[in-house]
Amino acid sequence: MTSPRSELPPTPPNAEPPAEETGVPGFRTWRGVYTFVVVCFAGLVALLAWLTQTFAR
Image (cartoon, rainbow, N blue to C red):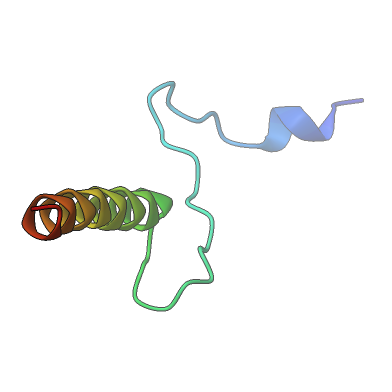
């Protein structure tokens, strides 16, 4: 009697797992979502720093 696991073809050790759907329109990968969030956060911090310097005088 063989187990069902032995019937599956072996996967290469460096194979990437299948990517999950993000569910976010315009982003196919989670890396893209996280990159967008980090860039927006950095832009907001830069904008707030600039506004502070401009209007604090």
